[in-house]
Amino acid sequence: MKIHEYQAKELLAKYGVEVPKNAGVATTAAEAKAKVAELGGTGVIKAQVHTGGRGKAGGIKVAKTPDEAESYAQNIIGMLLKTHQAPQGIVVEKVLIEEPITIAQEYYLGIVPDRASQRNVLIVSAKGGMDIEAVAEEDPTAIARLSVDPRMGLKDYQLRQVIADAKLDPAIANKAVVFLRQLYNAYIASDAIMAEINPLAVTSDGRVLAADAKIEIDDSAMFRHPEFEGYAEGSYENAIEAKAAEDDIAYVKLGGNIGIMCNGAGLTMTTMDVVERAGGRPANFLDVGGGASAERVKACINLVLSDPNVEGILINIFGGITRGDEVAKGVLAGIEGLNITVPIVVRLAGTRAEEGAAILAQSSLIPATTMQDAAAKIVELVNKAA
Ligand code: GDP
Ligand code: MN
Image (cartoon, rainbow, N blue to C red; front, side, top):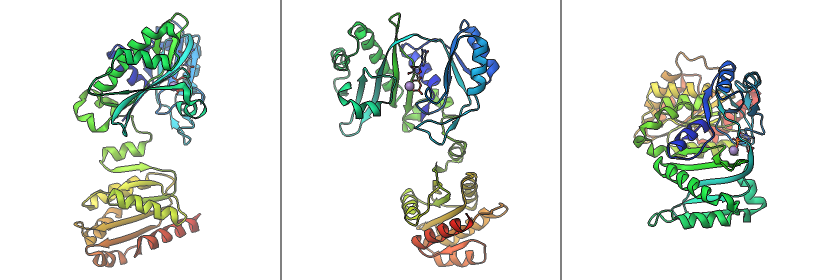
């Protein structure tokens, strides 16, 4: 689960990590104005969306007066922020109001698990304020790494070494050691799988603080962090995924126009591949899960259809313990009462597939015998409609 910058800074502050003073988040321009006044009349307005590159996309502005803050916030709140990480754009609902800082130097700090070595790795670079992937490509020697041996823990001398390797200003080395130690403590204690401070800002008056913060919490560890429950809300990149999570449906929105509904993650991914091979583009990943009761099928179809890009649906179900005739009944009951204007191709296989096909024969659903046949049919129907 990705958490927002303001939440990450709140979390980090609990572990002693220095962050700029802030007045919290605002959801209206008037609120932003009041909060900047609260900070003494100047403030940074920062869009709270799950993507980097907000600065370049116009999602971060420094206001010199409360009135200026109001007009900046007016522009930012509600805007569709498009960045290279999120080219489809994300609507900004909240802005963080923060004390402006005068940045003298920008550095990069990151912590991620390295699966190959089964250790957490600290990443430090003097080239902060830009995409670390770009730095890795253009100037890989500018990135220093420290792999933490879990048996030994993180030692101060190792921190000094990585800070020296990364060629951070020696004048701030002591502060950087403390900062990294606290960041690491916060990362471990919160079961994070990613923490990124970019930039780590050194101010003109020598403070070392997190100008930006991105943290991702391990979903599998959420049960032991009731304190993060409030963070789950708003952590989805779009409303459909949030609704899916609420209904406990494994759904991922993609960019295409063919809605996909299958059972089992493997079959779903295979179906997506087959659709691609047939020349189509999947609109989503959706695993109905076991059972496929009418109620669940209905919720799934509704979810797929709530994506305005969907121009056709492919349902591909393999009956194991789930019986084909029950799935067919589920699909029929599921679409009952829904106003469906797009073609739906259904392919059933496995236990009682023929009985299922017979049930569907009386409906407007289009039957298919194989996965390839189903993909070809839905691609053709969608293309014909276009
Ligand atoms: P990102 O673009 O989404 O990664 O957002 P950041 O929070 O990293 O902000 C982008 C850039 O805005 C930073 O690299 C800074 O140069 C600048 N910035 C952010 N906050 C401040 C601030 O308080 N003062 C100044 N002068 N610049 C800031
Ligand atoms: Mn940043």
